[in-house]
Length: 91
Image (cartoon, rainbow, N blue to C red):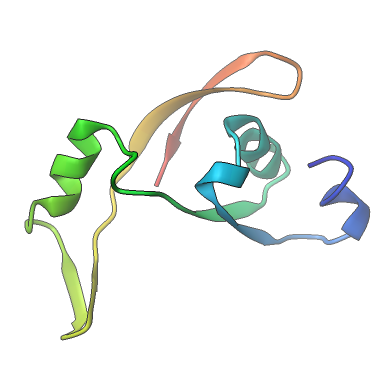
């Protein structure tokens, strides 16, 4: 992240990536620099509790007959670039 995104000289940005290419360390870097991210995630590779939440119809907001979504806040622990563990809330 330091060698890629920081060299773009952007004041603020939202990084959009596939979960396979985006680690917790990178998420820490993006958030610690007051930026944001959107990451796709495979349902099949998700934890059982996450899959159950996803398939449960409760909580979805329907924007149109073809599009609905839901979100939640979760607590995560990731390792930053210095090897320090950080706990934070993520949507």
